[in-house]
Length: 218
Image (cartoon, rainbow, N blue to C red; front, side, top):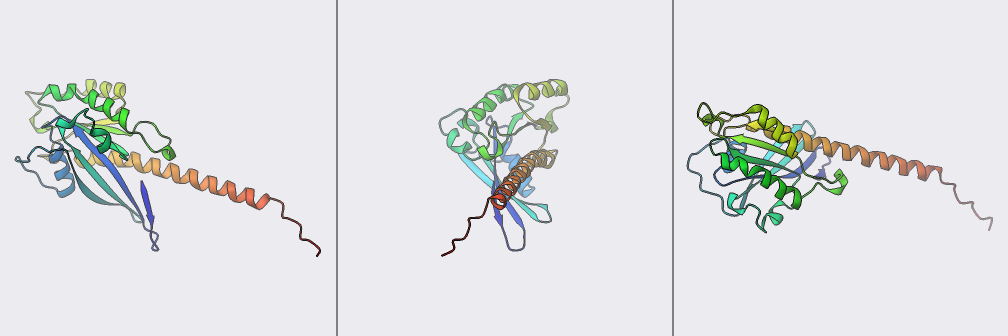
């Protein structure tokens, strides 16, 4: 969302992405796997909020810095989430495929998110893009099968861009899900840049077409 232009023409963007969902769904594990490529069975529950930074060379001339905000599960629907959500441009909502109640809470997390944060007006406003993560897929089969069609329909009905089955333990689909979400963000950024360039071109034409004031004779 913040663009810094360097003399070398390298563009740098900083985006805040929320990682939310019920307690114990694996949010911290997902972030640690994505940012540091490590996994542990012994992470302590997040208290309040924590965040990690991931730097991505998006293209030869574009660097993206992602702030991944790990929102504690027990904070759900509380007054503080409005503060935590501020200036976020996208979100990952996580549930645990082995615990159905965490999926039941997903729609509530999404509604809470939509009521408290939106895209910048320059990007057209509206809800921020959200991807659903069905986490702990390494434990899914056969005891906890995932209904692909039902999840597809749920995402369509509740305004999710897409869902991914993930596993922080196996490092499965975490990179893919985050890159998919970032692609949506960068597309919005490019659309805004194109609109700005078009508006600047229009203003230049208006300026050039304005009649010049006549010079006085004395």
